[in-house]
Image 1 (cartoon, rainbow, N blue to C red):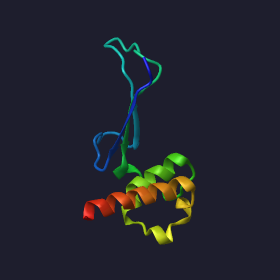
Image 2: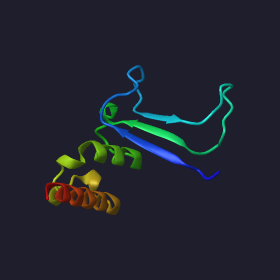
Image 3: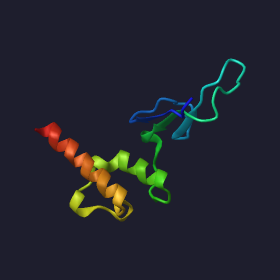
Length: 101
């Protein structure tokens, strides 16, 4: 089987009893045996993500998903100064313009 991943970006908390904001779920049977070594569902609870410092690409993307729509493309903060983030911001703006039209 080919690796299949699902990434769920949640604005609200789903797992209220867990402090972590990243959760990885994998397919296994009732005995706990994994079906695959790869694939699964990554659940990202954006409401729980509060890191101010962007030190990894994961944090950069999480902060973008959390704050992107409030950013001014002409005045991007230092943590957004990468080619990938500028492209993401451009894509976000294109979707926003299309929605307004």
